[in-house]
Length: 129
Image (cartoon, rainbow, N blue to C red):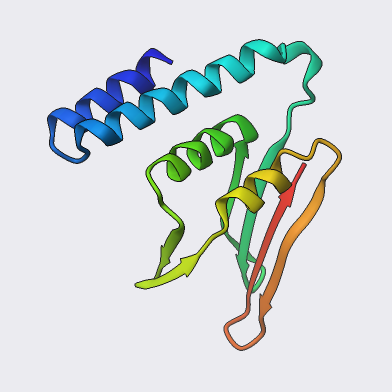
């Protein structure tokens, strides 16, 4: 958690965020730490978000991210009011509460996105494992 605090302070020093935003981010970090302390890691089943993109038969992207990192990012994004994702210059709205609710359902595993662009031969799969 020390690294996250240092990053927030660095962002404040560089003027990327203001005092109120820094305070909210630090509060979110404390909440995240308290949640982790309440539920010991040994009782949690480790889950991951896998992103796999292919073009034709060739892999383009193959990423596996731990859920802890995803939840931390969602928590920070919701605290600073970030409710869109910029994809190719287009802002796509995201309901952070619904996304967080779905991701925190311990029973949910499987594909959440499976998109194929036949024209360009691209295939995107995102799954929770």
